[in-house]
Image (tube, rainbow over all chains, first blue to last red; front, side, top):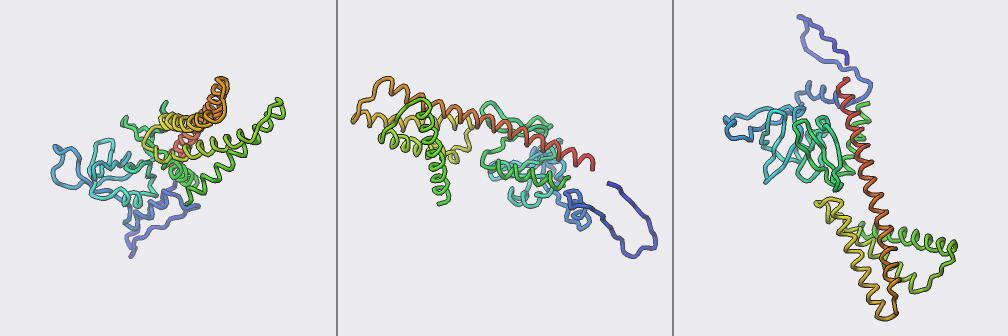
Length: 157
Length: 139
């Protein structure tokens, strides 16, 4: 995507013009950024030794997957694991346009971070990530997952 | 209600396929059937469709486990029916073997097709993910 930046000291109102051929996720993300609606996740390190009591802002792009365990929600990134103070369904709604899709009752995965999708010999399908972890794609979410992939493919073309 | 409707449609389709298939087989190889066989075939179809429709209850288990459990449940119920029938009419040893084979072979074929579909679908989904990721990088 071509980027034009113009500095004008006399301008009264700063503005952004977006020229697009099709409303793709990246365009939607730019709009959200301009509108200050770009989602960020607020969390604290799951590791208590690293938790200084301050909330950390997490870019959803850095998140591999979200895991809901024992009524707690965790986000896994390359750098570590963070506990989020929100719900999985709220994240699902918020991150729908950012590549996040529900694959089981307790997991939301970022399709941009999936290294490989592979079935086991027992026919369970797993999504593997760069950090070596893998998440099972539940059969009952297979249809939704497939529809989501088709939708993302359509709008990314 | 929707589930019952789906089960009935699946039952109608599977029974039609099996009875037409059986008729074609009889025409080609000169076999014959009788009223009891037709009813037993329908009962078997009902049991198989009902047991297979319970797959939603087994989503937390692996598909392989689900296939084996469903096979054991279906063959158990069908064997019970045949056992009850054997109290009324005589079933030879060969009849029992043929019954087991004629139930197991289509089930194995169905399971193999399902197995293939899981692998093929996953491969396709993996390719779509790579395509989406590639599009994101090139942007």
